Amino acid sequence: MPTMNAAVVTSFDEPPHYREFEVPTPTGHHEVLAEVLAVGLHPRVKSGASGSHYTSSGTLPAIPGVDGVGRLPDGRLAYFVADDDVIGTMAERAVVDVRRSVVLPDGVDVARVAASMNPAMSSWVALRRRVQLKPGASVLVLGATGSAGTAAVQIARRLGAGRVVGAGRDRQRLDALLELGADEVVRITDDRAETAAALAEVASDVDVALDYLWSTPASDAIVAMLTARQDRSRALDWVQIGSMAGPTIELPSAAFRSTNFRLLGAGQGSVSLHDYVAELPSLVDELQSGAIGVAPRIVPLADVESAWSRVDAPNERTVIVP
Image 1: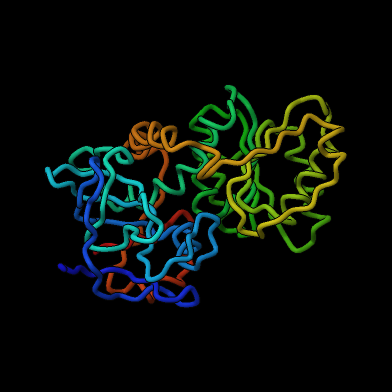
Image 2 (image 1 turned 45 degrees about the vertical axis):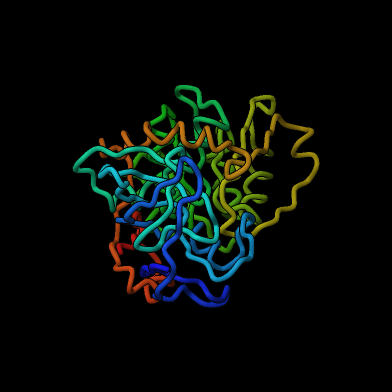
C-alpha cells in the first residue's frame, strides 16, 4: 500500500506524532483524493484527537483534522470539510467528498482560508441558520477573546448587528475587540459577582447571545442578565456553540418561566450538512474581501507534535502545512 506523511494519533493522552500512514482510498461516487495544502489546528481538532468531542468514535490510530484546503485531481483549489473522524485531513493526502467542499478562486491565500473558515463558520452559521438576526439587533459574544469569539464579533457586525458586546478574560484581546467591531467589552474575572454585575449592566437587553464558554460563566451571565432585563417579554436567544469553561450547566427553572428566554445550540447535528455547505461560498467571499478572518501561523506538518500545545495569539490560528 502507498504511504504518506501524516499526524497520527496513537493515544488520546498524547499529541499526534509525525509518521507514515497508508494513503486513504476514495470509495464513494462523489469522493476524490486531494493533495492537502493547509489544515487549521482548531480547538475542535484537539478535542477530537483527545477523544473528548461528542462526535468522537474512540477509534485509534487516527489522523486529526476536520477541514482543510487542498488541490483536487483536476487542479482546482477547494476548501473541504472532513467526512470521517478517524482519517482526517492533517496529512499529505485526504479523501474529499466534493459535496462537502467549495471551489476557491485562483490566488486565494490558502493558509488564511484554512485558519479562518472553522472559527468563522460557528457564528456565521449560528446567525444565518439558527437565529434570525434582525437589522440593528444587539449581540453578546461570551468567550469573545478566542479566535472563534473574535470572529463572531466581526461577523455579528458584518451581518447587521447594531450593537455588539464582547466578554472574555484576556484584557489585551478585549481591547483589540474594540477595533474589530465591539461597542463595549466586559472582562470575565474570578470574581463571579462582579462579572455578573458588569454583564447585567451592559448586556441585559441584548437580543442574541453567542456562547463559547458554557458552564458557570454562562449560568452566572444568564441569571444576571435576565434579572436585570427591562422588558422580560422581549426575546433573548441564547445560542450555545462551545464549552471552553465546562460541559454542563445549572439553571433555575424560573429563568425559562419568567422571561422570553430561548436556549438552542449550533453545531454538528443541530445544523444539517446541507445548510453548512450552503453557507460556504458566502463565507469564502467574506474572507476574500478581508472583512473578517483569522491570521494564520504556519507550521510544517513535521512539527505538529511541538505545535500541538501552543496557545495561539489574539486573532491567530495555527495552520499545519504538509
